[in-house]
Amino acid sequence: MPAHYPFALPPLPYPYDAFVHDIDRVTMQIHHDRFFAGYVDNLNRILAPWPQYHDWSLRSLLLRWSELPPEIQQPVRNSAGGVYNHEFYFMSMARPNTTQPDQKLQGAIDRSFGSMESCLQALRSTALSQFGSGYAWLSSDTGGNLHINKTANQDAPVPLYPLLNIDLWEHAYFLTYQNRRDTYIDHFLPLLNWNAASAQYAALLQNQPPYPCP
Ligand SMILES: [Fe+2]
Image (cartoon, rainbow, N blue to C red):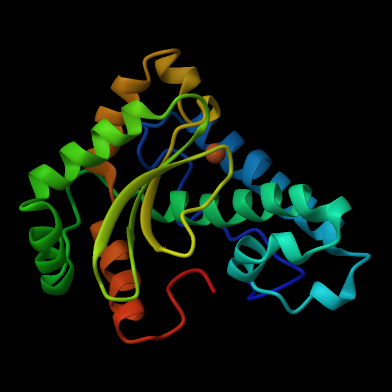
């Protein structure tokens, strides 16, 4: 993903059917190739006439959208959030139970939640409590403390630094799970990519540009 305008759709880092027992192929394809791509296209289209914002990063757009001209504030907020949040979402998945936190992230999980099991329970209950579209997140602050929260629509948990998320929009699960969001969440938790979350956490602790987002 480029650090600033024009943003580009990253390729899906695995086949459409990589997790077909939990996320069906059509859902994965539409989610990445239409929804994610649509947010990228919209954001570029909105920003095209405004060159003074072409060097703003996604995080800057999300943190400072209220400084933009009034007519593009909400469109930028929605589209930049859609890009940022989906980048984390597709990074948040790996084959079930094939990844684990590295030592530093595991230590932070133990400090913040007591155990991985408690962390997953908190993530699950937070996801279940989101009313309407949104996301559940595991994030870190700049001090390395972990936080679980939820956001509505395409809002992002900035100024926190996300490590992973669960997309709770119906487009993420409806074809397979219909209205059973709880079943989708139960299938998603074992997919969580703790290797990617560890890389993001390590980059944050080293004060490097966070992986994978600018
Ligand atoms: Fe989505």
